[in-house]
Length: 399
Image 1: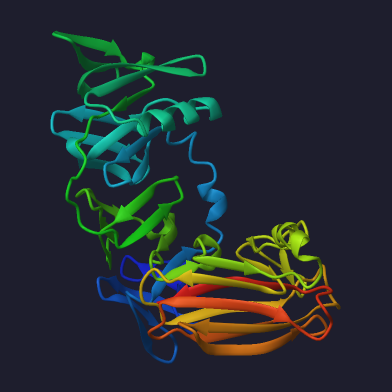
Image 2: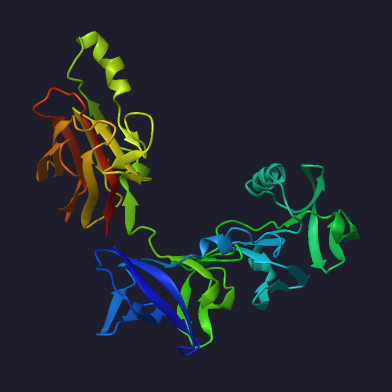
């Protein structure tokens, strides 16, 4: 469910309107008065309601996306931490074990050994692709990266201090002072296997920063966070775009690989069935007919499209409590379509219904307590297989 709340900080003097999603929660309107390891507390005109951290999915600032779309001109420096956080900065400097980042909210000191890479110059699509490739390529030594047109080249060595003018770089036995204007980026050799706390959530800011967060709290000064790599910051709530707590709590079926798929077309000789089965195979995040999933005039980005007679099975990645979806015959096939939908868990029928193209879509909510293998069968109805294009939109399992 989506709930609109007011994120209140600085002792209530500043409020930012956000949207909150929580597992199996009803919409709530109010102010976020607490946020920490236990969860989030919302104050409404009537009372207070607390969402436990294991039920919280996200907190998103409303209308923040446009501000987040253009951070590059104001923050040309991009810093990647070893925990996967990506921070935008206007400038940076390295002085031994400490790296200072100059950001729109003020200076931030980070341990140098928590930094994986720094991109010092504006990039293009071509250089971005090259930069990503270099980041994904392991190296036993640091690398100093320079740009030649849209191509990137690099030198192996040991990176040292960085100022606004120079970059220290030890190449073989010689320490060089390289003009920073010539340097595209810095990539540090960091040994794998570093032990770090678990990521609790992921926080996005309007300047383009993406923080992986191990600890978070709402305090009078703002949102205080600590990343798994140990970087700490106090962030102004008005710069918030989204805090995502959903990892592992909600999984879309279209993001899972089925354990088994069985397609049995109504028409066709046995030797032709294989080709027809491929033609009518399940679709992930799109309709059977070319185009998006669409029910009652609404388009869905996530979901499954299944033709009769199709059965898909999934091995659930852990214990989940519910299966949710909005189901109906795709708009492109209506008013035709007549199928029997059966949802089973470990061979036991959990839900069954006839779905007609003449009816509006419906939401289904199925109890998955104790279920490890989920089966979804779309069987033939009373009209052969004409128009039997069933959409299971936003089909998801939740904790």
